[in-house]
Length: 400
Ligand code: CTP
Image 1 (cartoon, rainbow, N blue to C red):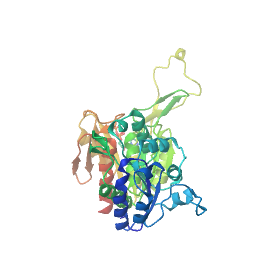
Image 2: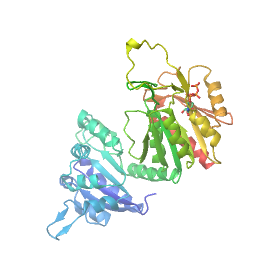
Image 3: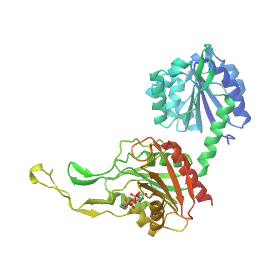
Image 4: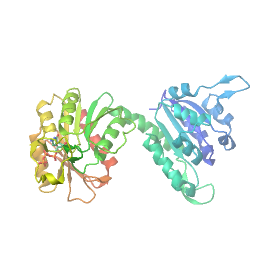
């Protein structure tokens, strides 16, 4: 998987830098082109000579070399790389990366990199668990950078705990898995909907639901990681766009969502309706705020379009349609009925009877029902992992 790949390896100041000699050796053995860049403090832990000999390229530490008069272009390198790996990533470099500080060649290249960036922290356990380091790791992940978690074990300080940089052969495995996964859904167009819809009553009020959008956003992210060309259509949510999602369309109402989905579905290999679409909307929207004195005690409602049912009618050959069902009673029967009525290939069922499942949680417990009557049951998991299970099912259906 790494053959012919351009790997930009950034080494920063940590004792774990000694492991990069083995890492570079393994990368070269795999057939990767390796360009090592270092911070000045990394030189105290491993010599540039060692790494340039193993990588067969001069190591770059400063953008300008006064001896040769040569200038190393961080933007060019950032574009050259198929992947950047910051290993070991010291607490100092992590904080600069998170803050966007570009005061050395490593951090400048990081900001210029267009490719996926992996980072493998290495530091003492108390440093690793310091809230500022943990926050920086969260920030970096929220930007789409990929964490290679440190391992537990004996540290250079003599203490025991988390902070050991992952072993070079394991990092190679992580990179290989990444490139293999990115091919899984390459060339597939996938439409994912997420979040609630808001149906306005007047300028300050709406009918809505508790959907946070987390499930749909996680799914969109995992599908994109597998190489799919994902368009995310979302109702109102506070969530940031996942790093790999290039196409996001924000809508408010079910009617707006329907228009966008009918258009995009014509060209989609897969449609996943994770949105919690409001079934009804007020017949009329008051132009001004409805005052208490008006004594309005009931709202006249009209039915919203059932987007998924309509997509089921328009379904083209080979297209996969996936729905979600949130049920409180007769869960499986209701979900099967929806699957059949809406002409779906699968439906993801979550029951509000299961603790930790459903709206506004970070976890979910789902059953996936298929049109042949098969049911796959999954335990309670983080929504990102549930998304992985559903994405794997979609891939299998596309392959079959
Ligand atoms: N859905 C939709 N348009 C609607 C309502 C729902 O596309 N107007 C989709 C949802 O995105 C979900 C699936 O249909 O994928 C099932 O939604 P759910 O609300 O559970 O079912 P409903 O068909 O609305 O039935 P009910 O509310 O009566 O359970």
